Length: 122
Image 1 (cartoon, one colour):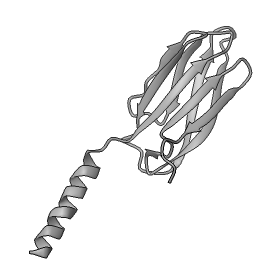
Image 2 (cartoon, one colour; image 1 turned 120 degrees about the vertical axis):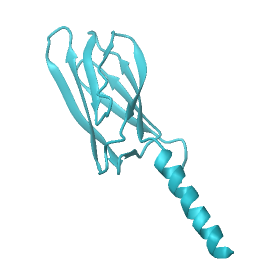
Image 3 (spheres, rainbow, N blue to C red; image 1 turned 90 degrees about the horizontal axis):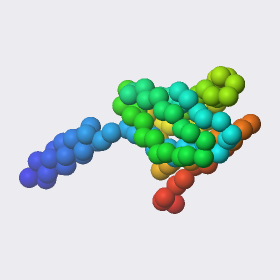
Image 4 (cartoon, rainbow, N blue to C red; image 1 turned 90 degrees about the vertical axis):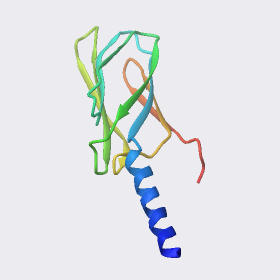
């Protein structure tokens, strides 16, 4: 009987983990003097591209279902005043899962500030 319980437990865990979605959670605020166009964060299975007006912020959730390795995120966008493409690698994910609970991104005129948010201290 114990063996059947163990098998049932393993099957249950397998189903639970296979149904989970790998997502990255970001809050992006544009505190620059320009509008942000064509912003994307990689890796994103949906390949979302967003626009953020100056002074606005948004929450962006990306799907990372296709990612099966470790790596860094990559943000890129176009500065609407200069048409310059701005990009930066940051952070870390492992096996397609975000380590942080949320990553806050603040875009200023001359830099991008990144701050990780952890809700649980382990």
